[in-house]
Length: 286
Ligand code: AMP
Image (tube, rainbow, N blue to C red; front, side, top):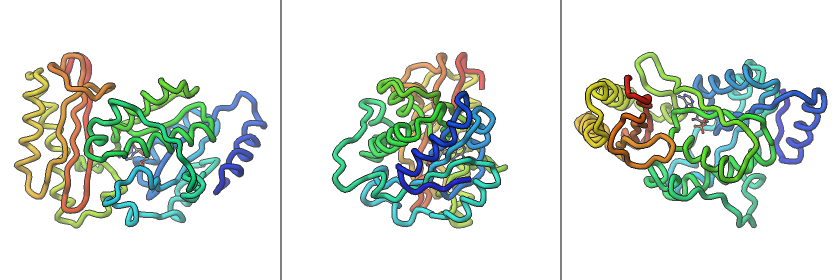
C-alpha cells in the first residue's frame, strides 16, 4: 500500500499501477477518515469490482460552515492506515489542505437546484465544497468507478448530477447504509455522542422505520412527511433540522410515493448533527 501526500505523487503512483496492466480498473473511495465499517463496506465493494483501489482521506475544509465542527472532526490517520492495509487497498491519498485548496484558487463546482436542497439548504455552501473537492479527486485520480454510501443520500443525488453534467467518465456506485445492530447508522460523528445521546439518537432510525411501515398503506408523501416529523419531534433529546419525503434523484417534493421516494432526516442530538434515510422502492412495498 502506498501513501501519497501530493497530487504529483498520486499521479505518478496511478500511472505506475495501471502501466502494469492496461486493462486494469481503478476504484476510488473518497473519505474524510476516522474510518468505520461503513467506509470499509465501500472499500470491499470497490475491491470486488476493480483491480486496484484508491482511498482518499481528506477532511475537506470547504464543506464545513464557519460554525461547524471542522477543527474538532476526528482525525485518526494511523489507525485508518492500519485498517486500509488490512483491506488490501493499493493507494491512499492524504493531501494537506493547501494541496487540494490552494490559497489562490478561485474555481469551484456548484450543482444548482439539487445542491440547495436537504443538507444543501441547512448547510449553505456545503455541497459546493463537496463537489469542488470530489470533482478534483475525480480529475486527478481518474478512477473507473467511485464508491459512495447511501447514508449521504443528498450527496449521492448531487454527485450524480455533477457526473452527468460534467461528463466524468466513471461509474458512480452507491452502497447500502451500514448500521449498528440496533439500527443506528454508522458515522464518524457518532463518537461525539454521550451514552445518553447515543440512546436518544436511535429515535432517528425508529422514525424512518415507522414511515416505512406506514408507507405500505399510505402513499401520500405529505402525510408520510408529517408522520416522520412528528415521530422525530416527540422523541426526547432530538431537534429536527429537516424531515422530508422527496424524489430520490432530484430531491424535489413529490405528491405520491408510488414512483419511489427518499425519506430523509437530519437531527441534532445535543451538539451533534446526524443524518439518515431510507428509500421507498418503486411500487412502494417496503
Ligand atoms: P465521510 O468520511 O463521512 O465523508 O464518508 C465517506 C463515504 O463513506 C461517503 O460516501 C459516505 O456516504 C460513506 N459512509 C459513511 N457512513 C456510512 C455508512 N454508515 N454506511 C455506508 N456508507 C457510509
